[in-house]
Image (cartoon, rainbow, N blue to C red; front, top):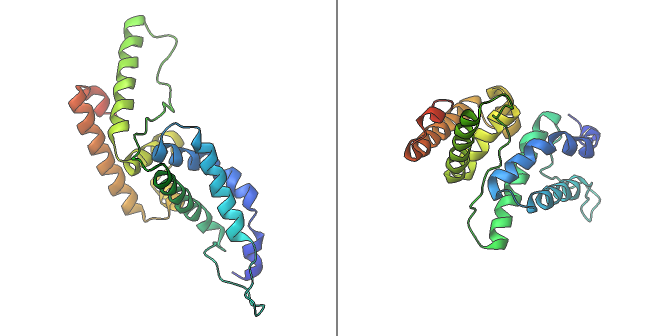
Length: 192
């Protein structure tokens, strides 16, 4: 691709397109905090700063890490989001104790009260177990089950091979099962 194609990427549209899953990544990394929106704005600022045409003193264009290929936009944005989450933890000087939000509501209004209570308890155990996972594990499970992406789509968005996605999901599910088993919620563990 030529340099003119680098300017053809509409960064505003790209950010809006990728906003939902990038915010989930940030939420998995720092928890359900109001800072998620602030961090997404920092990602947007980084995108616009880096995508501006910069020139050396001699007049030649500077090379930047901004992707020129639209296929590489999602992985690049993912790396920016992860970097912003890491910087957030450095600034706040504390480790994440993220509490995952319930993205999917498994409850149906047609449930009987006992069924509803059991489902609510299982959801609470699942949220607790997700909160015990490392942020990358929580992140990959959240993206898989809330975005309903295929392995190929996940690999494309995260910029890694499909085999890496398969392995990360396998290990994340195994760790989640271990946490759920410790909580005594074996029926929920089989769903993942």
